[in-house]
Length: 81
Image (cartoon, rainbow, N blue to C red; front, side, top):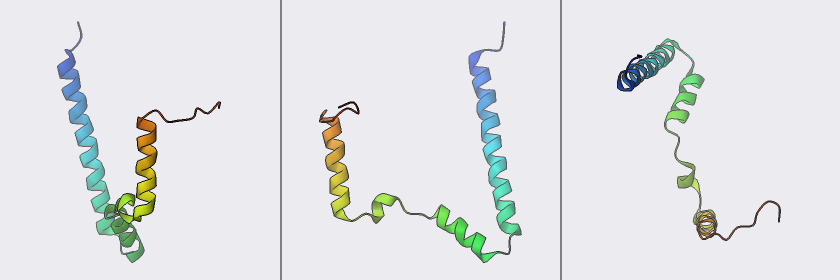
């Protein structure tokens, strides 16, 4: 019989964590090796980018909330209609 599921899951999870850790280390190395202010600025923009919701004015937020409410209440029109 094969390996128990919990052992398979633990093995997979450890490998995934190690893969992510290796990716992070590689990114850190690349950042440390660069002398390009443009690359550093781009990384900062990506890492510190605000959620789009925070940049919307109240009017679009209200429209989005109203649309979500309509969908939740079943007030939709099918594609075929």
